[in-house]
Image 1 (cartoon, rainbow, N blue to C red):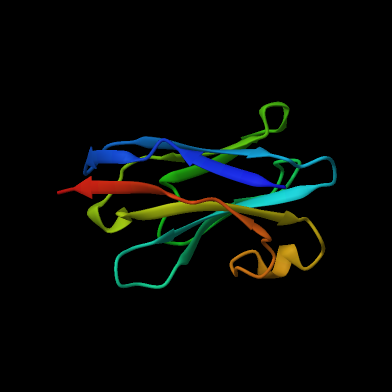
Image 2 (cartoon, rainbow, N blue to C red):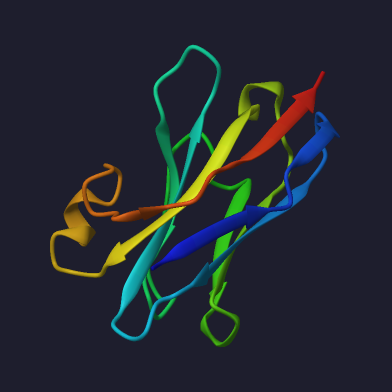
Length: 128
């Protein structure tokens, strides 16, 4: 059974940085793309970033472009989200998810549909 575990969340002041990790276990083979989503209190879950299996394609929400960087180390089964210049509005529970990298992924990566495994999430709080 596939399991995704996030880590690296915490409390940081505005302007600070955090690096989130998403470690996968239970996958045997196949090409999986990975995404990060976040959900703030009282709001719907929203797309943050995604990366293809080979790491060559990276996608970002407009709200984080230029501040967040996604990367992966397939030897460690881990995807990272480096978050710089954090703002109070980045406060949320951040969850990673992955799914088979099919042609649909390149179109629908911002939606939850392409992802079939989700982590429990890690809290990120940015104080002003």
